[in-house]
Every structure is written in structure tokens, then in C-alpha cells.
Image 1 (cartoon, rainbow, N blue to C red):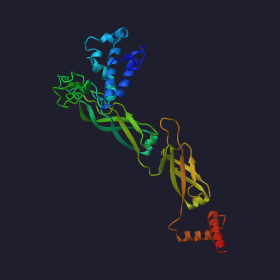
Image 2: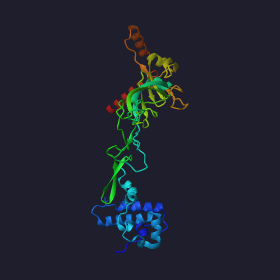
Image 3: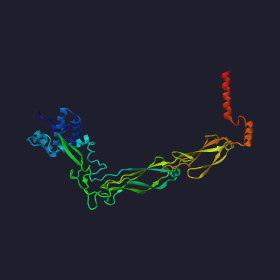
Image 4: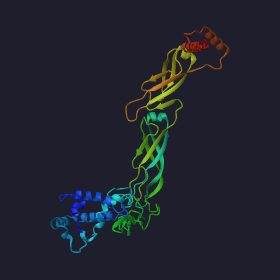
Length: 382
């Protein structure tokens, strides 16, 4: 059976660039890879045909020979593209293999992760929960916290090796952190079992850190809490997390803020709400009340006569500051009219006199309500 033209196999023109060849090979090889098409002999045949074509065309010298002489350029029994899988098969397949099994092999080449070949690993991020008062959220705060964490070992300077020694390249993988094993017609690459992907081993570990390059200690850190923070605000301290393994970069520390409930105030974003009880006489006759504000001062509020429970008064600019801005919220005072209790005889007499003197104009809502109720029931009986 005559061989098909290599350009036709890859579905590209003779003027295709190296990038076009590689892209076409990747796409078609993934489609007919034997692992994706088990028990499909035709897919296996096409997969081998694709590899043969790509092996010939990816090399500039081989491609020039093929363009001039065709398949005859590789005849002669050598282990070239026409003689099965050549010595460069593993390298030619590395890109497509990364696409198919990247996650299994620990990620594609060129994508850096937390573990490096030098054996250095980035430290873990840490979380610290901190509770502050509403007043501290209003003004901001400079705080000092104590965090138990891993820090670099001073004895070995974070290398993990005994002073006077240093890590050596792993003899199993030659410092690569990965080993290869051939299975059938392709090669599998996996993490080195001896060094666990670090590429180096420590023959004489440091006695203080047992070869990890870090020890556990408590650290004191200064934290600047800006004015206007809300419940759940997260503050990041870069590089203040757990120290990296064997001198690797440190992680970050995240401080999560929670705000204690206040005795008088409720917060809604930048606005503050406060419920204030007032005497019945103040509500009826009007007057002034002194109310606290979140900044710690006292503000006088004028209550007009005839005020009822639920009436709100707005104090502009007396709320919370908005984080990292010059905007300030408002404060809302909501009055609650208190019913007198534990009356003296004289107080009761005065209220009874007031009731006798009362008429519809003094309690329009209650008078109107009971009038409508009376009309409703009289209408039903009629």
C-alpha cells in the first residue's frame, strides 16, 4: 500500500510553518490517540501515520529532503520516520502527551507550581481571625497580633542541610525531579519517588529543623486596620505566612475581621441606626433629647410635638466612614414612645382627667379606627 503524502496526513499545505505543523499534529493526534480509541485498530494506524509524518516534517533537514525526494528520501532501512518510531519519538510526542495527561503528570512543562526543581516550596497561606469593636472600625486601629507559624531555620539558613553540608542532586532522577518509563510505543513521565519531585536530597539533615528548613515559632506582627472596615473584611499581609520549605518563598497571612455587636447601634453599610425610647409627655408635647453617636459624642435632637413610635430623624454625616474614601454615612434615630408604668395616685388622677378632657382631635387614629369598627358592625346587623 502506497504511503500518503505527509502534508496530506497532517492536513496542511507545503508552505505550512513549524507552528502550523505542530498545531495540526497536536489536534489530530489527540483525536486518534489509542487511549481515547481503545480497540480501534484504524485509530492506532492513523496515530502512527501522524507521528511518522510529523517526525519527517518537523526537522528542517528532513523536511527539505522530503520536499525534494518524497518518501524515497527515507528509504534504506534506517530508523528514520519510514522505519517505525525513531529515536526522537518521545520528544516529538511530549507536547501531545502533556495535553492528554498533563494533570496526571503533575502539570504541563513550563508552568511553574509551588514545588520547584531546587526543592524549594512556597509556604502555606495562614488565616488569623480578629475581633474589633464598632468604635475601632469607625476610627481605624493599629494592632499587634501574635501568630504561631513556621519560620526559616536560622541554624541551616533554611536549606534543611546540616551546617557545613548542602543538598545534593537526586541520583535517581539526576536532579530533574521526574523519571521516565517506556510503556509500549510511548513514554510516561512521573514524579521521582526518591526526591518527590524536588530534584535533590539531603544526606545530612539539620538537627533543629529535621531537614525541612523551617521551625515553628510565635511571631509578633503589626497590623494597620483602616477606618471604615466592615464585618468580614480581609486584610492581606504579603510574605507573612508560613515559611517556604528549604528556603522557598513564604506564603501570605490573611486577617479576617469581625465586628462585635454594639449596645446601642446597628450598622447597615455606612449608615448607623439607633432606637431611642422617649417619654409619652415628650412625644406629645415635643422637646429635645440627647443621643449618643458612633464617634463618641452627644448630639441633641429636637422631637416635634405629636411624634409617634417609629418616627425617624436623620443626622447627616454621623454614620460610618466608607473604606478608603472621604465619604461618610448617616445616622438614623428612631424614637419609641414609652407607656408610663408604676404610676402614683396623683399621676393616675392627672391621666384620668386628661382622658375625660380628650376628644377626637387628640387621638385621631384611635378615634377613627373605633368609629369605623362601629359602622362596620352596625352595617352587618342592618
